[in-house]
Amino acid sequence: MLISIYGGPSAGTVSDSWRGLNAQWLAMEGMIQVSMDHRASGHFGKEGVALMHRNLGKWEMHDYIEVAKRLRAKPFVDTTKICITGGSYGGYVTAMALTYGADYFTHGIASSSVIDWKLYDSHYTERYMDLAKENPEGYKNGSVLTYVNKYKGLLRLVHGTMDDNVHMQNSIQLVSALEDLGKHFEFMVYPGGRHGWGGAKATHSRNESYRFYYKYLLEKEFPEGLFK
Image (cartoon, rainbow, N blue to C red; front, side, top):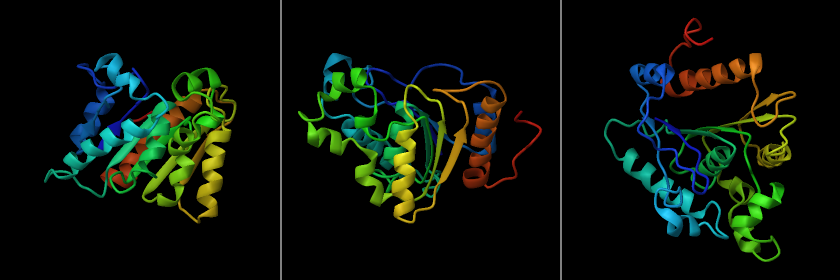
């Protein structure tokens, strides 16, 4: 199963739209693909979004875990291969899923991820979390680093070295914590990449994600000629 996510406040992922030929191909290969939104994703109005005030990470993970529980109970779902992926806020959610939610999610690719809200843009963070000194518990509870000892499964972190939105220090701090705990993970760096990248590196990044899916989820040989 592959869950593609964003997860930020008032920013849903679910839509009635065509996801492209690559998604269709993965479905034909046996990959169940899922999009899901939490109560503060914007579909449920201001009341839902207001729940995120001082609580980034709380309701997103609560709702995503509930969905994961229901999906894992289906007889056609391989519970050893529940993969989640996203970038930016979606990377944050993915990193939380493999730590805080590690009993329910087994694999993840987290790109350009916020790891600790103290490291992110204060203009955005304080809009939802207030000042760190005013909301220490909220910042602690919303940090991936708080739950790093729960990590299991396999997480791949991906980051551009010149990211001026989510500074690479976010991923570096998680890398350091995982290393100190002796945990196995993967880390892919894109030199010169900002909050996203184009050209040959974009092609490489996309294909490496598909290699990950084929190796760890589908357990099939990667079709080199199809993904270029």
